[in-house]
Amino acid sequence: MIGPLLILAGGRAGQPSNVVEWFTDLESRASLRPIPEQVWLTVWHSGVAVVAVVMLALPLAVVLAHHRRAELAASWIINIGRAVPTVTIVGVLVIVSLRNGFGLEPWPIIIALILLGLPPAFTNTYAAVRGVDPSAVSSARAMGFTHRQVMTRVELPLALPVMFAGVRTAAVQIVATEPLAAFFGAEGLGAYLRSGLSTRDFPEVQAGAVLVAGVAIAVELGLLLVGRLVLPKGVRMHASAGRAARSQRREAAPATI
Amino acid sequence: MTGRRARRWAGAVAVVVLLVVWTRARIDGLSVDTQATNPIVRWEWVFLREDTRTELWDATLQHLRLTFIAVGAGTLISAALSAIALRLRWSLAPITAFTGFLYTIPSVALFGLLRSRFGNVMAAEVALTSYTLLVLVRNMVAGIDGVPAAVTDAADGLGLSRTRRLLTVELPLALPVIVAGLRVATVTTVGLVGITAIIQLGGLGSLIFDGFGTQYFTKIVVGSVLSVLLAVVLDLLFHGLEVLLTPWSRRPVVR
Image 1 (cartoon, each protein chain N blue to C red):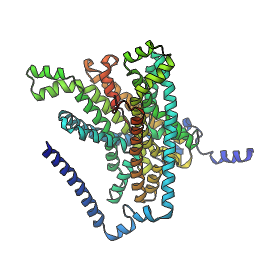
Image 2 (cartoon, rainbow over the protein chains, first blue to last red; image 1 turned 120 degrees about the horizontal axis):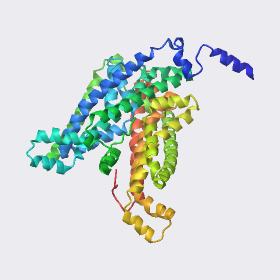
Image 3 (cartoon, rainbow over the protein chains, first blue to last red; image 1 turned 60 degrees about the horizontal axis):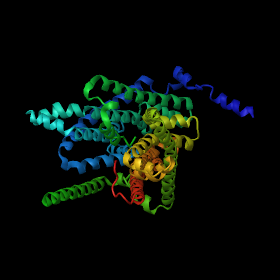
C-alpha cells in the first residue's frame, strides 16, 4: 500500500510540493521564463489593448450616442460582442494569423483582446452619454454654450464615472483573458498554468493561478483607486448617486469573459 | 424615410455580397497545394466523415450539460442569497461584493486552481457556478425590488401571507428581470465552458483547442460557429420561455 506512494513521492522529489516552495525554488522552473518577464508580457499586451479600446470605443460610442438613429447599430455591436465566446475570437484569430504567416505574438493576441474589451467600454460610454440629465444639457445651451462646449464641459464630465467604470471592466477582462493566449502557444503569465496543467504539476498550476488572479485584482483595485483620485468628487458614483447610475451600471454589466 | 431605409438595406446587402465575394476570392486565390494540404474548412470532414456527427453531438451535449448544471446550481444558490439579501437588507452589500469578487477572478486561474483540488468536472462546475452568481443575484434582487409598492400593499391588504405574496405576486411580476439575468448568465456560461478545454473538458471549446493543436482549421471553425449558435439558441429559448410565462406583458420591463 505504501510502496507505490513512496515511488510516487520519489518520482516527484525534484519538484516543489507546494506553492510556497514553487515560488522559492528557482531551479524547478528554469525551463520557463522568469516571473517578472511573464508579468511584463501580459501587462504589455493588455496595456496596448486597453489603450486601443479606449481610442476606438469611446469616440464611437460618444458619436453614436448623439445620433439616435444609430441605436440599431449600437445594440448590434453589444449583442454580437456578448454572444461571441472568447475562445472563438482567439481561435479565429489563430487561423487568420497562422495562415497568413504572422505567427501568434504579439499582434493577433492584442487584436483578440481589443475585440474582447470593446463591448463593455462601448456599452458603458453609450449609456453614460445617453444618461446625462437633459436639463443640464439644455441649461448649458441656454447659457450660450456651443455644441462642442456642451460636449466637453457638460456631457463629458457628467458621463465620466460610468465611462470610467466601463473602461475598468474592459481592462480587467482583458488582463484576465490574456493568459488564455498561453494555451495557444504564446508566452505570458498563462505559461505557468499551461505547463503545470500539462504535466499535472499542481503547485505550478496554483502558483500560475495566484499570479494571474493577482494581476487581475491588482488592475481592478488600481483602477478603482485611479478613479477615486482622478474623477471629480461631484460626479463620482456612490451610494447616493441614485438608482439611475446604478441601473446603468447594471445594464452595462459585462457578459463575456 | 423609406428611401433612406431602402438605401440602408441596399448597403447591408452590398456589404454581405462583397464579403462573400472576397472570401471566395481569398479561398480560390490560395495556391492549389496550400488548399489541398490545409484548407480553412474541409467540408468532407464536416459532412462526409462517419465519426464527425457523433463527435460534434458529444461535444455539444457536454457543452450543454456543463452549462445547465452550472446555471441550475447558480440559480438555486442565487435564490437563497437573494432571499437573505431581501430579508436582511444589510447583507445585500457584502453579498454583492462577494459575488463581484468571484466574478473578478480570471476564469483561467480559477479553473486551474480548482483543478488542483478537485476532479475536472467538479472544478469546472464550481468555477462556472460561481461566475453566474453576480448577474443572477443582482437581477433577482432588482426584480423583486422593482415590484411597485402599491401592488405589494394591495397583496398585504388582501391578507396574503409573506410566502404567498412572494410566490403569487412578486415572483411573477419580477419574472422578466429574473429571466433577463438568466439569459445573460447562460450566454456567459456558454462562453466560459469553452475555456474549460484547458482542463480537458470544454465541449465545443475542446474542438477549437484540438484544432489548434493539430493545425486543423476545420475544427476551429466548426467549434466556433457551433458555440456561437448555441449561445444564440439558448438566449432565444429563454426569451421564448419568458414570453410564455408572462402572457400579460409582451415586453420586458427592465433589461
